[in-house]
Image 1 (spheres, rainbow, N blue to C red):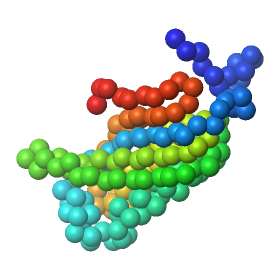
Image 2: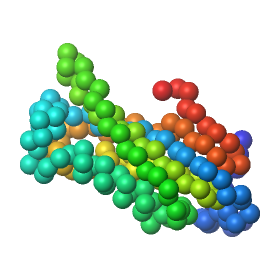
Image 3: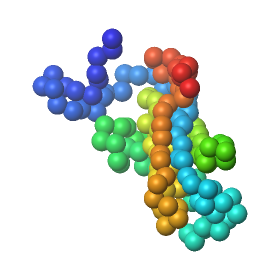
Length: 164
């Protein structure tokens, strides 16, 4: 089992020193989702929400969140991100009254540490933004699960989630 790295010898939080690491190309893909009711699904699909284009705003929010991850997650390093992509997909099973937006974010950098937190933050903020824009039509939306799908680069190598 790997020991936790964000604690010093006194058991207090610390930012990990990455100065000895090699700069490598790194990517991370994270996923989240938000389940909405039929009315919200219709409003998003037809572009009739009162606050505007839900996916456009959520996409911009996700990009901004990835870029600001180090300012809201205390031990994250500020990173020069080289690419951020956000994808939305409807998963619909109307017979079960199931309307869900699958959110996938991909973040890239060439740096000393990975971008998993940036991808996870982007996916989370995208879902939260959908909630914020649609809450007037129903507060029963459910966010999640949110998880890391894959990552590449770094001394620990690649990772691919296998239990989707």
